[in-house]
Length: 361
Image 1 (cartoon, rainbow, N blue to C red):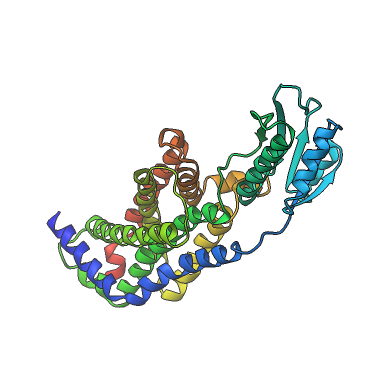
Image 2 (spheres, rainbow, N blue to C red):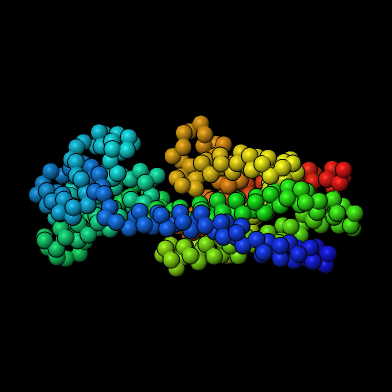
């Protein structure tokens, strides 16, 4: 164990001297957060709101007029079937259904709001405005207890911005990039410089070398991701609802997975150019399919089964559920099992593929 710890300490010192690598591993996610935060800071475009007016009374007319006065909606009144179709086609962002009993008769009315689940950034804007309109109508009519409540369909997300949605995915993406770069690229570089050939004649076993490198990169990933989390919270006002300990559990297991995958890639590639190409083959499809920038549910049906079993999908889904919805570990058991399976497979494969004598030849 002392041998492993000493080797891990040496690797940490080597990485600490590479300030350029540290800078660029943090540069992309921070810049992306800034761009999203800046882009969403201006005046929003009017929300396309469809209304199904099943009441057709003065109450409904006053309510619709109150919504129009907010200037945040482009309102279209039509039948429910056509508006549902517009919502599916993306022509409407929200559909509000006013029931027949929408009137001041002392009985609360349930208003149904239809929102496309993939349009997560709209939820935080739509619901407060609708509730405000309800309050305005109540004050105009009787200024007493609420007349109606909102019943939301197909909305799983809490009030949030698009940045809140993206940040957990960016953390998962950073885990993948930092880990693969720290293991796969290092293996190729150690081979090119003859470091592995020298280590071959020492008492160090392959498992000792891999363990020490995993330990050093875990520390590096935790430090860098902690910096990203603090930046998201204090610079961009991102809210993490769930347990930070649960968040770090997913970060730890995810780092181990991609460190081991990086070892496999480094064992296959013989040059820096090859590891870049092979690394892109692994990281680019996962960046697109793993729900980093948009929900997996918005992908074509035939692609979703593949996307759901990718290692980055388990990590990004778990991080997002914890950060946005405050989901507990018990509810995330499927994601945890998927991550553990990938971790065991990647670890066994990395040890099997890493053979000293091949680099000593």
